[in-house]
Amino acid sequence: MAKYLRDPIIWMFFIVGLAIISTPINLWREVGTPFVGVVSQLSISDQHWKVETTTPSWWSGLSPDKLLPLDLLIKINGQEYGFNTNRIFQEAIKENHTFVTLEIKRGSITLEKKSRLNT
Image (cartoon, rainbow, N blue to C red):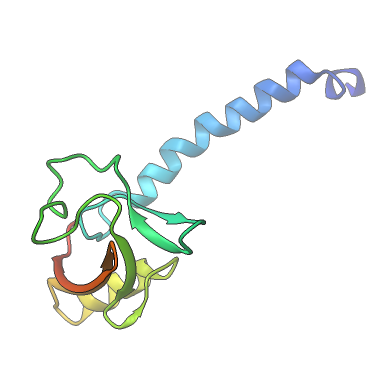
């Protein structure tokens, strides 16, 4: 048994297997949770979350009067945008709100936008 634990191919299969299993589990957790209609990711260089260019163009959060790719997401409902956004979305839904207020930075301009919560 110990011989197999030293084999790098066994470890490679184990790691790939974990990745294959974790992907649908992560998707299952995320489907149906509220979001603002864009893909966002933490930008280490800007120290803020930003709207990703990989957001599909037909998603509801993208439009010139809402959000654009590369907009920096600063605040949501007056709180810093970050890893706590799901909690903020849940609070908004509990209070029967269908929109959240986003403070964004587009270039050098700071804007405030209303965004519909999508599930």
